[in-house]
Length: 224
Image 1 (cartoon, rainbow, N blue to C red):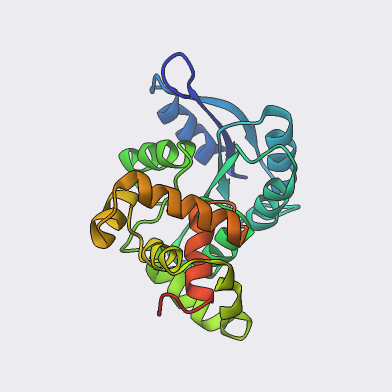
Image 2 (cartoon, one colour):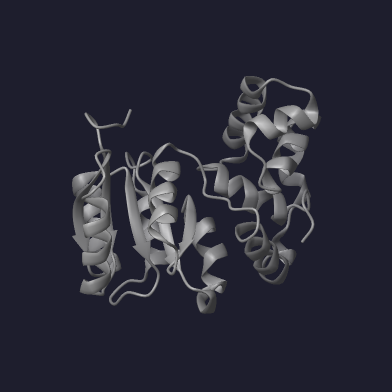
């Protein structure tokens, strides 16, 4: 539970000091967010995540020693760090890394030129355990690179563990719909939709909602 008494703890991982300073200045003005630590390399980000167990790691992709994708993969694979959510920073010229980051275990991504309000919103969304799946950006990128890089690995038999309803729900998650929107589309309550999403995540071994989107594209539930 977060709030003024339990602020969202963030680790800033970026090799540029000015970037980290800018983020810190912004985050320090918020009552419900605090900067728990900083990292200048991917390896430091992993160390900080394991030592501090923050709610969110704001992860740059291009860093020395270990890039943000590998750092995300290592954090996601570390036992006991399921509560550490990764928000990857990217630019349009690194779109190819977005899919890799989500596949590695990131909960979403944010463009580096996002405004202050967008950054704060993204941190709060990811800290709450949701995926940052902006329909106009994330779905397009995932579709583009899933189609190009994973068509040969798409395995529809992976969906055999799901009920028909769960397949419908995963397909709608893949389209970027929220639980209330899924409920409305399928004539379910938001709570029931949330239950189907949770069960599908468990059955498919998805770390979070973002990985459900990846699976939806990989298995052909959603077409690019």
